[in-house]
Length: 180
Length: 288
Image 1 (cartoon, helix red, strand yellow):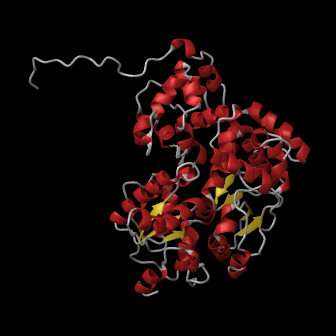
Image 2 (cartoon, each protein chain N blue to C red; image 1 turned 180 degrees about the vertical axis):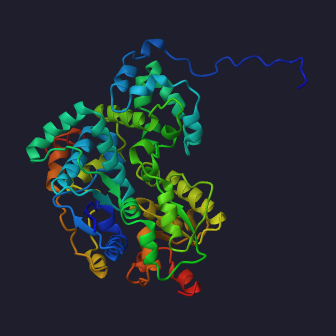
Image 3 (tube, each protein chain N blue to C red; image 1 turned 90 degrees about the vertical axis):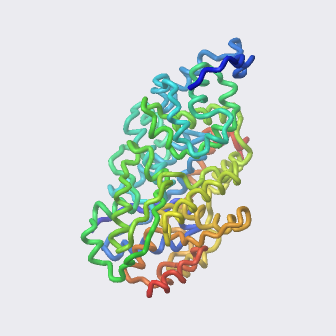
């Protein structure tokens, strides 16, 4: 390495400054108390999760940044981010975390909090409607194909009523709206 | 001979009767009894888990509790169902307070989750309860020399502490047919199916990454143990012709179709014509 005389000035703003007054100090504890959130604060920001993610290159906030944002209390930014919904749920990040932070599970927790506040992509609301209306994501339409394969035209044992009733009484029911 | 509660989920019966029928045909060869579960429906998928964790816990705990009535383990041919059932089973057997909450809700439906039976993927049950030696005895038409790339699927493999699935199981089930397992760099990577509802372009890119990695490593077929992965890798090959101008011609077969062929079943018996990328020409070429 050769030393040069010229030294670049540090950039005036390296990242968007964080407005401390907007931070929610309870956010981290909120996530920690959710399913599989216990290890959250063990994160030492090594960014192995980001290296493991097959799509982090397309994300504005990378997985390790999202975890850091949760720890800092950036509730609004995390819950309104599109990244949590783009997560493939492939668990590559979680599997490789040297601190056993359950990264993918924590993103599920974030989505649940976002859902509680009504921040859900339309396409996912559409799927929730399907679940409540039909009691399953896919419904047999081509029953002749089943018969061609020596199967009963209708799936033996299938009953969607209990499934629909359960989901109408949980958050899914509220998401799809009203008593319908 | 072993009996299991068969949890079909929604995708296999609706989209892949060829997978469902080969599941039974292969099970038959070993005297395995598969009992369609009564009164159950969908697992809700990771989408339900994302928006309604409690609802997802309750519906899957209910499925597990229904199976507990006859005491047989659950087997499923779908990685998505497997992932949901396995995760809920793991979570509720490790979190007594949630188990209590869930059971309070289930009381109305007349069942209780105790955790006395296990949810398993069909191929794991086949491997562990029948064993590779017994399977080998049924191979009458070996797929000698055929290079097969395995797409294991995320929810079959991870999180490892939850799924408890060893990838060697899948490898051995392919090798026992006489085929060779083609190793390829992106073997662990996601097929992109889960992101399809929110970003189709990204989903296509991910399918392309996988197919390219398999093809470049010399695969003749790829095999899957999940209808969502199967759909994504098979169907997107048509899309990739349009969007990227690329042709992969890599037939995507369900593991039970591969096993069925190696056990001497005909193309029609394994429902080969339902696979969109045709496998027939390659099989003929092999002298089948």
